[in-house]
Figure 1 (cartoon, helix red, strand yellow):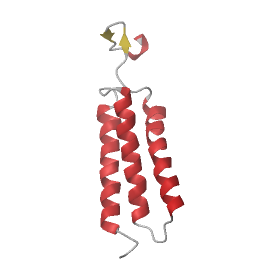
Figure 2: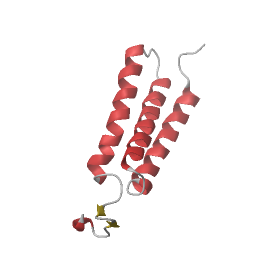
Figure 3: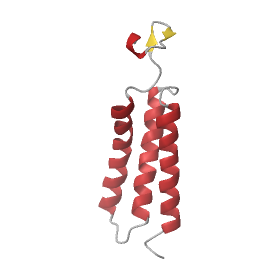
Figure 4: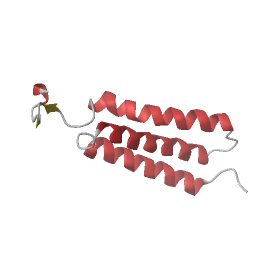
Length: 101
């Protein structure tokens, strides 16, 4: 059995990247914050796992570190770039002006 699974690896990288782009650019303000973070963590983990599947001689430590690292950094990266997840709520009305929140 080969240690490199190029097709599965590229598929995971593409699927994870598509999910991350969808959540970051289209759903970041629409989803609940916890759901956004979980979706981005899953996307990051998929990208990390896909990157390991296309490499030779990957050990257990590589899997533990790379997948966990990507699962943490992907939501953090979106938080830094796009601000807090979820809609801005002032009282019970969603604020249209970000300065009002």
